[in-house]
Every structure is written in structure tokens, then in C-alpha cells.
Image (cartoon, rainbow, N blue to C red):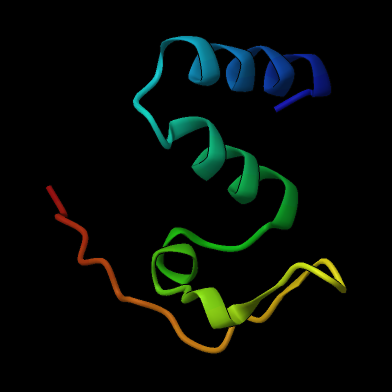
Length: 66
């Protein structure tokens, strides 16, 4: 996505999405982590003081091939 497209997408997610949509898409877009890595995060993986996230595990999400 271009910068402007991402800004519009995030604005729409914030205004019209489900409760955590904005936060989920914000983290995915600005960190580059994968969905399976995001859903595997625990609070201990997030360091608010140093503003870092430790990716140490992932959940494999099966895909359906059609």
C-alpha cells in the first residue's frame, strides 16, 4: 500500500472496524510481523520501556487451497 492508502485504511478500521481491528492492523503494518506471530504474542513479549516486541514463537494458521 502507498502511505496515503494505509492512512485511509487505518482510519477506516478505527472508525468502522471491530474493537481491536485498528490496533491489529496498526501493529501488522508498522512492525512487519506476520499474523501468526502477532496472535502468539504474550504480554511478556512486549517491552514498553524500550519500545520493543520480541518475536519468539508463532501459531501456524492453516490455509485452504482451492
